[in-house]
Length: 195
Image (tube, rainbow, N blue to C red; front, side):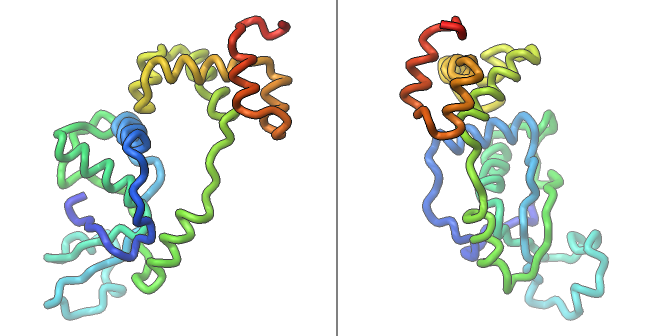
């Protein structure tokens, strides 16, 4: 982690909302970084050689080398927060020596890769999220555990689980766009799926 630095080649300028940061930090704290960062090499000014001729595993041993985060800036920030807070990542104390999975790319493609990562992603459909929260509960996780893992309040977890417990036929209609979120919230007032 201590070899990573920020770069202005990351195209995301507007920071996500604080609640999204809280959710990401909670998941990194619980499970670690599940998607690698993409970085490019920044060699020290006095380096005289061809880094391509050195095995990538040995790059961190080059004095003064750094790796600029071109994709994964929010994940980097979550790790940075946990380092400052003296927290843990997946049960391991976060330190400057903490190993972070990174894919190394060339600097000249940094802007394109950053744009691809932010542009070519699709958010999960809310119905899939609702059903997943119900599944976590069925797997034995309490509302408090789920809330901690995902950086949500227990009330938010209960609401999401209620939405995921609506009759499956209605969830299918919601996925197809024939019902909207307000419709789903109206149906979530009862636990009786048949009703």
